[in-house]
Image (tube, rainbow, N blue to C red; front, side, top):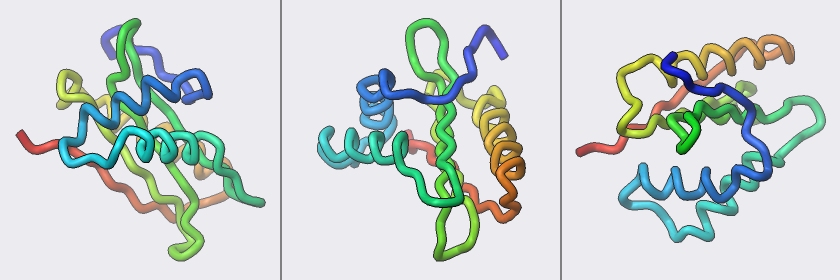
Length: 121
């Protein structure tokens, strides 16, 4: 997959992730709200289901990301993925989603809901 690094998101990624979300959505909330959402996704934990936050990046920018949060109301993980415009149609989000599903299964969870967000042009 074209020299992309696949890794878990971390605290030092907050600003880049905030900017990535802002660039991919034209009707986004204010940057501070996006940043708080990124922070929540990075650090949210509950007693039995960890949040999984993976990204693909080249040396300069984020290409795609996947966030999986446990949704108690559905008794399932909800997976959200976003792919940057330059990186679409290359299977990057599919790879991250499959990786995330494997991590959810390894945690003992087998119910998954998946959403992929794409900005309309």
